[in-house]
Structure formats: structure tokens, C-alpha cells
Length: 295
Image 1 (cartoon, rainbow, N blue to C red):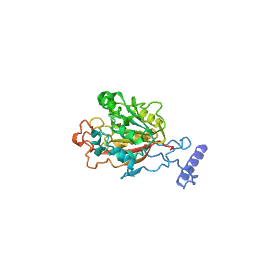
Image 2: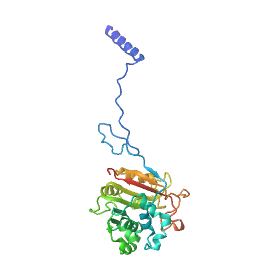
Image 3: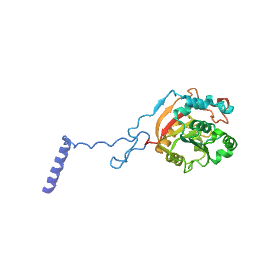
């Protein structure tokens, strides 16, 4: 009984101590750095690899593009096809080439070049000292591109264009390395309903570019919150989906431009060139300049 009373006394003393102010806690260790925006939470500081983008600046917001005379001359060339020139008002090719920094002598590529509207502009811009890899997959060639693409490649101005027939998961040949830029124009959304392994595709593009090389993306804007729901029915994709997927491959968004924005676009109609009719070239489009870090 005496032992029981002693134990009870100790317990009451401990409870009394809990109501008193606790002793000062030792200083807390510094918190680990926050994960970069758009990426998963970082691992504990001791185990997390250093992030090359931790201090990366916010992407530039480009509202006006200065077009060099040489690039204006590319677009104004008298020997361009009338059918191509008819698309210029809605595509703004001079601003596109200038924004993405295309210059003579560059090595560039276009994915899903289709009939070659953009590939020809790139060929004229990089000139005889440059090279353009024009890729199409089997689906695009069989569906609509084989004849116009083959015919265009016969033009003298296309001499420095290398035809590439490959699937998108590994779109460029082994010799296409240290590229200055890779263009993907109005087609990223199609990769979704085509079932492309986009993670593999973006990694392959990352490998093909030189450090500092540009991944140029233009596509039809989907409505907020739609994600990839409209990629086949309206040929649109929500911009944030594209950003997240490409940044996941290691790219950094360096700049975005507004020259193809259309604030009056309700974004609820089919932007496919086969369907859009008179609305073709009036959709709201995002223009994103991603870069491979290290340049």
C-alpha cells in the first residue's frame, strides 16, 4: 500500500508539471527549400538533388515582336505560293520566326510538318548554311500530307530540308543533334487523341536540342478547366497541360507571346483547318518558348 501511495504521488507531480510552462525548445533546423512551382513537393533537403531552375526568372511576357528586315524578306519573297501567302494573316509567320530567334545557319526541326508551310519558311530563314528536319508520322502522311509534302520538297528553296518519316515517340534521326530549335505548330493537341507517348516524345526533343535550344510551341487554346477533353472534338488543349508536360521533361518556359491571341474567341468551336472554314486563323492561340537549360 505504501508503494502504491508513492507511485500516485509521483504521477500527481508529473501532471502538475505539465501545467507549468515547458522549457524552451531548442532552435528548429532551417526549413528545406520549397519545391519549384508546378513540380511535386521536394524530398528532404539532404536527399533532394540541386535544382538548376530554383532561381530561374519568370517567363517574359512579349506583347510586341520586332521583326528584322531579313525575316520580313523571307515572308515577302515573291516566289512563295499564293496558297501559303493566304494563310499569313492568320499565322503571322514573320513574328513567329522573330520571336523564336531563327537566324541563317541554324539547325532546326519541325514536327508534323504536314504539307510544309512552316518548314519552307524555316528553310528560307536558315538559308543554304542551315538545315531543317521536316518530320511527319505515318498517320499524317497517309491522311493528307504525302502529296503536298512531296511536291513542296522538289522546290529549290527546300534543298536544305531533310525529310524525316518517323513516329512521334522518337521523332528525329540520330544525326539530328545539337539543334537550335524544334517547332511544333498547331499539333500538340493531336498527340493526345492519337495516343502518343508524350513524355517519351518530349524527352527525345530535349535530347536533340543543344543547351539553350528552343522548343517552340503554338496551339489552339482550350477553355479553362477542360484539360485535354476537347483535343479531338474542338482541336484545342488547355495551355497549362502543355506547360506542365513540357516542363516535366526538363524544359524551362522562357517567354510567351501574345501576337496570336484572340480575346473574342469563345473557344467552343472546332479550330481544325478542315472544319473551321472562314474562322480559320482566328482562334486564340498560345505561343510558348521553352528552352533546354544550360545554354
